[in-house]
Amino acid sequence: MDVKSSPFRYVGSFLALLMVTAIGCGKAEEPGSKKSESDDQTASLNPEDLLVGTWYGKAKLNQDLLKQKLASISDSGERAQLQQIALNFQTTEIGANFSDSGEMLLDIQVTANGQLLRDSTQGTWRALNVEKNAVFVETEEQLPQGGTEKNRVRYQFENAGNVAVMVAPTSELLAGCNPVFVFERILPESVADGANNGTLK
Image (cartoon, rainbow, N blue to C red; front, side, top):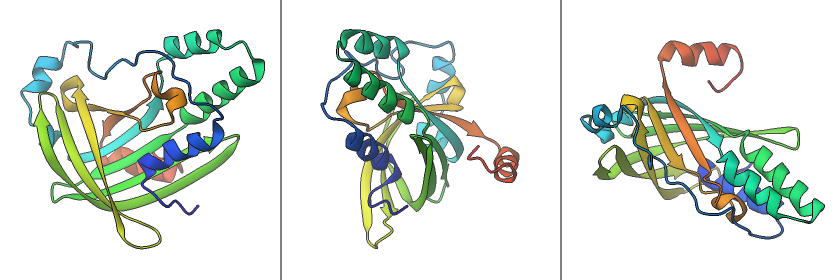
C-alpha cells in the first residue's frame, strides 16, 4: 500500500474517501475532561518522558454520540454509510515506539470492508510544549516517495502515564463523535509475543 502521507493522516484520508456528506455527531468530549483517580499521580510525572516507550493503540468513538447521530438520520442509505465508516475507523490499530533519542517508528493497520490495509513509517519526534498530563509534539516522518512531512500531535496521559489519548484526525463525518486513539504502554516481551502471533500488539 502506497501511503503518501503520515499514518495518522491516512486514517482521515481513508475515511474521507468513503463519505458523501460531512455531518458531525454533536459536541465532542475532550480527552481527559473527566478527572480520573490517577490524575494527580500522572501530573507528578514528566509528560515528555512519559511518551518514551512502546505503545499499542486502538481507535475509539463515543458510542452514545454515534447512536444519537444514527438515530437522527432518516435515510437508510446514509445511516448504513455512517455505520460502515464508524466500523472501519474502529478497526484501526497503531503500534508506536518513541525513543529517548528522538526516533519514532509507527505501524498502522485498518480493516476496510473486509480488506486489511497496513503500512509503517519512521521518523523523529520532539516535544514542543509540555502541559499538565499532556505533551504536544512535532513529528517528522519519512515519506515513501522521498522527502519528509511534519505533523503536530497532542498526547494526554492517564493511568499514571500508562495510557495516552490522542484526538484522531479523521473525517468531519465522525469528528463530533469523539474519535480518539487510545494507546496503552506495552512491555518489550509483549511486543515479541505480538510479532510471533502476527498482530500489532
